[in-house]
Image (cartoon, rainbow, N blue to C red; front, side, top):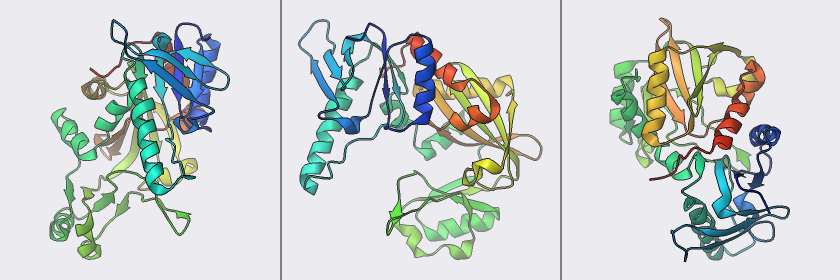
Length: 322
């Protein structure tokens, strides 16, 4: 039986980033149970009772090698979990079974209010809407490039002509493939004449292009701020991680405080911010990824990001849903 103070790491089977954090937790002698929701069945079981006082979930989560008492969970690291698809079942049955796992297993975990979350998935979801992010960034006094969200092609063309240099961004990344080939939409320049009536199918995000000298990726873990300047000749540096220069920088205190307050607004313990730095050195808001990747930055800069996550999880400070 796992001792009191176990950290649950919820992620897909092959996750190097989670491995890095778990390694640091092991060094601190913090017990860890790692699992993936897709393993539900023989490799993962959950039992919870709600007939006790004070009201809380009492029971166990079991994997083939570990068992943890639910009321002894210190923290939950919600990394990159995969929910089961039940591909062996008929489509209607698979949809039903998947919903039972999401609202059963997920619901039991969400009921663990006395432990800390990095981050609680409901908090992640609330923070993941780009239009809401933009409005909040404005309210915090951050520089936000002029942005239009629309499914009206005439409005989109008018915006492009008004601002000249405009880019298109997806509102939400989703797995996307065509004829078995994986497709990814990068931030791309757009011209007014490219915009036809297919724009009406869904809302699109158009944004005035920042004449940037570099990008900033800012990772916040608890109250620790890690900032890396990414110098690249690409409009979207994510296209090729290997061809950039990475430099550790110190953010101005005001910007650090603002980004910390931004996370606090959503009740997040961690988040990855992207900002564009213009030719005058001024940062412009681009977006927040509540659960962004960061392991490659630690590899290139030596910043102790994984250790910061381990410290936060070991502390077990509460970042629960109110």
